[in-house]
Structure formats: C-alpha cells, structure tokens
Length: 133
Image (tube, rainbow, N blue to C red):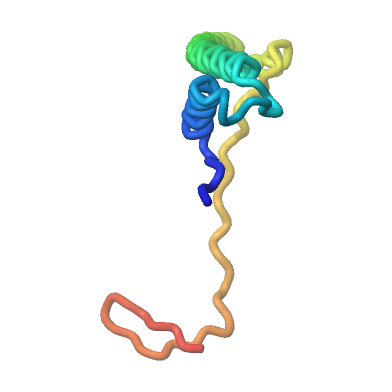
C-alpha cells in the first residue's frame, strides 16, 4: 500500500491525480466522500493561498531590507551627532546628558593578574608548558 505524502508539492500532486482520477472514473467511484469538484476547489484554494504566502514572504524580505537600511542610516546619523556633541561639550561633558549620552570614562590602569596557585607542570620546553593533573 502506498504512503500518504508528507511534503506540500507531493500532496498537491496527489490531489491533482485524485481529482483527475475521480473525474475520469466516475463509474468506478460513484459517490466519494469529497466529490472531484469540491476537491478541485480545495486544491485551487490551497494554490492561491500558497502563492499569496510566497508574495507575502517576498514583500517581507523587501521590507526587512528597507528597515535595515533605514536603521543603518539612523545609527550613522546618531553617531555623527554624538561625535559632534562630544567635541562641542568637551569642556562641559555633563551637557551630554541632555542627549541621553555621557562623557567617556577616564582611563583606568589595569590590575596585574594575581598569583597562580596549585599548578603542576608535567613537562616543559623552551617555549611551551604541559600542565599536569
């Protein structure tokens, strides 16, 4: 016995074959639960909705590209304004808070790393160390 298809194209193809088969073999299948005309209408409805979905996806892709371009333009403009404001408010950095921005933090010196403890070296060379367990 055949298996019912799982992919949409194969389902649509089988639906087309069933519609054709029911239409041409009406004497063998006189009263199907879903007549060929109803099945054809359902297949047409599926194809229409599938095409609408494809158009919608294409439109969404175009809209996403448009949105990303608009966001990039906005970010570039914001960065330019913030750089300008940082230079302009160099002597009074607290003025940047009016723009929702803050002055750059002063540089701080990094702390040196702490002492390494509980390390065992199994083997070592001129430029490498192999830790032990």
